[in-house]
Amino acid sequence: MNTSIDHQHKIQFERIYAEHAQAVHAYCLRRTSREDAKDATADVFAVAWRRFADLPNGDEALPWLYGVAKNVLRDRSRSQRRRDRLTVKIGAQPADVVEGPEPQVVRSTEHERVLAAMAKLPDKDQEVIRLVEWEGLSRQQVADMMFVSRAAIDKRIARAHRKMARTLGVHRSDVRTTPVPAEEGGEA
Image (cartoon, rainbow, N blue to C red; front, side, top):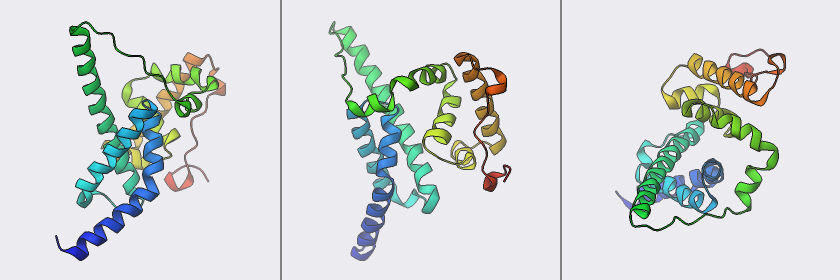
């Protein structure tokens, strides 16, 4: 790689990092502890640097980074489970992780019931809800990211909202799904 291309690559990467690092960190923080979220975020951008040629431009960069974050967190979780099994085998007790203030804010008391209701959903439905509601991706972006149709995402969201409403004891007439923006085919 010549020096001018390398310099351009670095400038583009720094721009993407500046635009999306906070969102990727928030994504990780909602799924793991504060310390693990920092490490996972660093891992996501290490992958992005190595696979820069695959990193889409513009609005598609963040969903791509979320996809990498999902894989990084899954791999980290799998590694943690292996470490935990080894710890049990040698007779040591796993240390309790004390979370810092960030996850405590994200997981504040008023959200505990919703999180508990979400935990009862299938993993795929949980991830769709997180990507649309928390990460702010459009339903079409989530469909593209998961290689399914937009209709499949709409059905998952509607089904997840109904299940969560039942779990939370909300009457069916009070349940409404997230409005679909006009640019995504909803009513204006």
